[in-house]
Length: 351
Image (cartoon, rainbow, N blue to C red; front, side, top):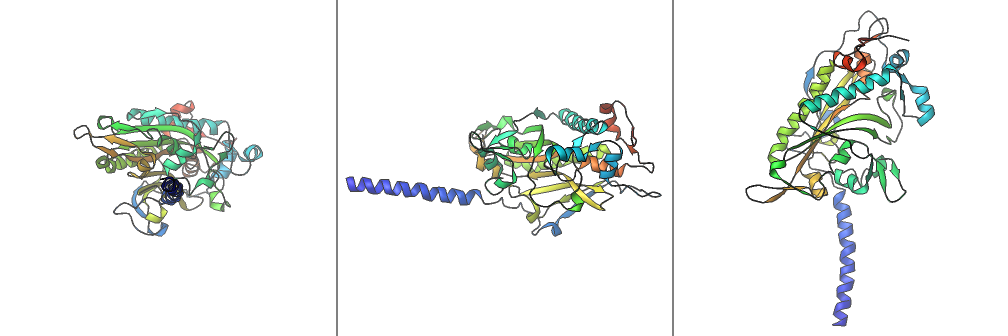
């Protein structure tokens, strides 16, 4: 019996190591692409909608958003770099006011739709990144704090909101959950910056309002369409020309089964830049975070579906606003929906 007990103890120790190795392998696996998602990478992305037309800037040489933001006194790039280093900028004067006006516009529109406003923590624990599907594969993409255990600065409010009901069972009558949050987002963005990503197009800190939803499996496709519609309506409210693209499997993030990108036209670059991604993770994140719901009739417990969408990120919007709405004299027209939040200012003029 003693020999048998020793053998059992040795096998249990071996089992712990095997299960640890198995789990480490499993949590690194990505989500499966949804039916209808094209294979391949960016080259197979499909443009499914174009709204508005490219602005006609005839008769003058259009400026890029970096020069416009400097001449209008909206952004102080040099002092932003002085304080934070490369990849940071400083909003000032009307630039700070326009940034806050954008956030107020997004928040008011989401409240009108009955979404619940949340302000989550900016410092998250390791389990948050694991549930979201960002860890362990993309652990090096976040800013970490080693003191008092592993903590990291949230790269997007999605990473916080997806953990709201971790290890909980909701009732069917509670669903769907419609949430949104405002946070700054912090990203390492390792690697060299390309010329097309100068200014505010790519940075280590930016502001974003994030939409998030928990649904029953049979309702997640309809919720995806709802989130896409909300993100598109926000851009249309600003009067910005954009296109909506359905991403191929290789261009979707590892956690998502389906993703649509809203891409804004930047005249100085002659290309579109993403300002919002709307995605359906189906039950991938729910399984990682053990998030379930109980059917009212059968009492059966099932995994939730989770969806998210930028609603919206501001760091691509201001470049698009100043470039698409610039005039020959260097001034920029303020989108009408923002004027109430900017003291009625209709036109930004060079200082």
